[in-house]
Length: 363
Image 1: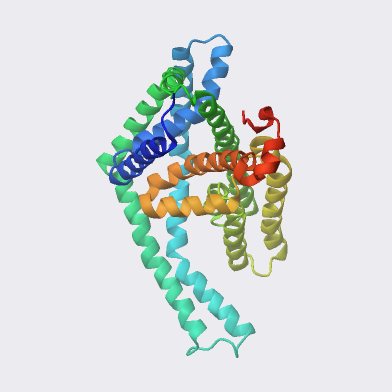
Image 2: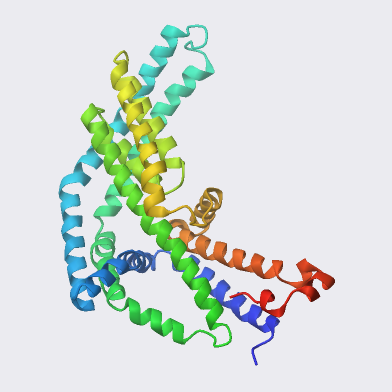
């Protein structure tokens, strides 16, 4: 006989509270383990396919690790320096860009903008703020990235954790399955499969979409000749993980930069706009339907709220766990709604009594 509902709620409530408190207190310590787990989860299907091709789990893990290390080293040597240089240059030239914007507005809208107007003063302050705060942010990021602790964490601990988790992934899943409460194991397995399907469709699929679109935007903008095309493409590709935000922010940034750089060369400005139009058509009609799917179950508003809430409370680690927690909550809520719709509370006494017993069960 299973435990009463009140006792189960108490135990699961305590477990959830302990998890959140641990996440809050150890957010900086567990970062490499969260990253390693995310990498292992992302690469587990690749390891399974290599196993099906005849490799052992150890050989598949070693092959994946070698390819990942070589790809990371290539990216560090080729892309990252250019990206950092363009970001620093963009921050340094921000005051000049706002000065040119002020001159443009003064020429075409003299009554709207003068030296004493609020808009003129605001533009000057924005440029100075971007230069000072942006420079401080970049300097802080670069200095932290060069510190011994972060180098060890990012270049040693995270790959090691990912390697061992990927190696033992199937055994860990099997062991967790053995620890499930026997009375609720079938339901928990069903919910776990739905959560995994949601995460697999969204995280793996959306990450691939971000990589493809980021590469497309960066390469295309650099071919057009946009000075900060790599930065704009990187930002657009990275923010594509949040629905609609990547295209809006990246497109506004790229077109704004194109207006300053190519003013009067309308074909160049149109080419920048066309790049993002093509990217959006690719994302909406090809990439997202093929790689993510239409039944992921993560509404954009719910996803943005989860990222904002967890990021505010738990920092960067919270943003990492926001998507899986949001997916789990979404699956559990849909399951609870299905249970409610089949219950006496929803159906009513008379209608519920007329429903055959097999129709009231939820698989």
